[in-house]
Image (cartoon, rainbow, N blue to C red):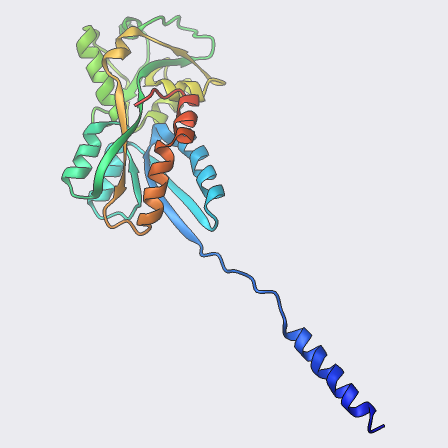
Length: 253
């Protein structure tokens, strides 16, 4: 019996030691990257956001898609965000002047207008001049919104004067009215008409070449996730980012 005691004690100690060796699990920090982006970037940035999350463990990308002018106003009034992507240079300049941007913005894409009409183009619209015909309900973006500024520019250059039934705060609202049948036609971006091709038809017009919008992106000053913001900015500017944007119909910078 005396000989068994040391042996039993040794086995008990070994079992205790083995039981204490638990696998060490690394804790991944959860972080949220907040991106303020123009409404026309909804589909393309949505895809890029998922890819960015997949390549950065524990990161969630939270988007706020609105008209660029509304986003600038929010930033200058103190809204917290990490990245700002505008649908034109003018609104990015406002953000820079308002001292809410960190560093120099970079242009990552371009876009131009197209006419969105109902499926099958029931009113037979062939170009910009047709939108001035009596009896048509046409919608555009408000002048302070990039797509509205572009619409105003093409009208001035072409001599075509539109009488819109409404001026919307972002391009998606214009598209929604055409899609629902509340409007016969609307001036939207090529990318928006392309993304909604199942429900609307797109009519290109040559005058749109005179109002091409540049899309700049920048890190927001005092961004809560400044390092992630810089990485997301570089990801959008990368070959993979440009490929996704081109797939959505955006032009090269």
